[in-house]
Image (cartoon, rainbow, N blue to C red; front, side, top):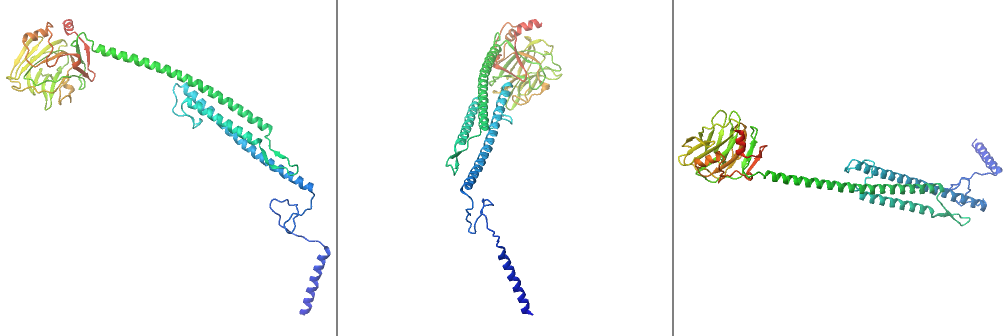
Length: 447
């Protein structure tokens, strides 16, 4: 049985082999190298089968050469399009920069920052802007010339059949477009440069004119200040002025620049005018370290006028709050603390035991119009003097009654030997003012 089966299998296999040999055809599969044409025959060894004619091979090479040339020209066109876009972008940014400069000139002043559409590398000075635009134009021209020159160079590929170099000339349309773009760009840049040059010249002229106007205004101001300084010191005489303290505040006051020496007697005289109520306030005060009330003349509230020496008090029989000019003099001596009070040349009161045997301390501060709680400061508005003061003089001795009468009736002028009333010796603060005054004429008119 087994012998019969093996015999049948042998018979079938033999017939199959003979039937394939009878047909005379075979299918052979070979690998094709990359880039080869599918129709090209290759032998079992991988060598090309020379089944085509030389003419076909030459045509096939020419076709491949043309394909490479087309691809190169396509890449060149793409690169040139990118260059054109870059040139257009540069041109737009230059125009935006020029517009921004124009806006700055129209506003009368240069802006510190450029807008969002301006070139970020533009300088802020017009001359630097012109130089930068010129450099940009030269750079763009050079790049375009290099690009056009590179496009005229021969291609590295040769036609194998004819042996003639295959050139890749720039297409006429693209060449004309580049020339037009280059010409338009150069024209616009030159126009912008010319406009910037003109604006630079105008800005220079405007700056020069503005500088001239500023210098003229400064010169006028300096002349006016000089005139005011002269007029401030141009009273008919250095003592013909008054100090006005129009409000009851703690910041209006005058200050005597000179201080006092140590004194064992004094006379203080002044003209004053006030209608303040209640009380005229403090015409003057002298404070020293450790004693703010070394010498004070004050009328506070409904109290009479008081003289303080070393913070000791004496009431004076004076009445000066009628709104008219009055001349008052106060004398004091350390011997027994004797004092005298004069109003308009008449002695109205005397007394003693006012800080007897106390010497007036030196190196303090004399304030007009305020009472001092500390030396030179801490004023109280309720104690401020309201009115006008003039001819504040101080001596380190007791004046004779005849001298005081002469001062009161304007028949004599005798400045203080310790504190004279002169313009250079008095300074005012807080809104207090100095004004010209001829006290005797004003008093006569007031009467």
